Image 1 (cartoon, one colour):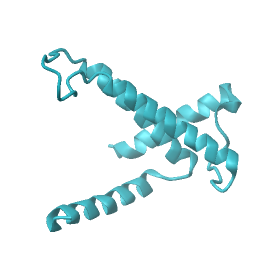
Image 2 (tube, rainbow, N blue to C red):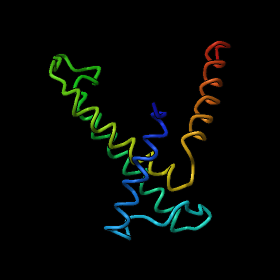
Image 3 (cartoon, one colour):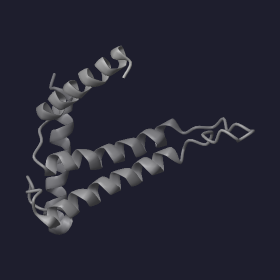
Length: 124
């Protein structure tokens, strides 16, 4: 069975390639050079789109106000997850655009995970 993270990267890049064929202005050719202003602007715009999708996800959370007396019991789990996936896709697009691989993401994730766990153990 194929590594799931690699599959996610491959699916995202396939989508981005197909989008670029139908809409060439949708993104620059990758990997982008982040020392170039227009590429930085494009990556920043992608990040902000991801943040917007996260805002759409948190709009499904109705009970976050500490002063609210009533509790909304309904929650659409599927719609919440769909918005999280939308956000993830934008952030994943940034990794593809900037030339990072699934292996590099996994290595960076493990490294950071070790750091935050050590912080937790040492009372950081």
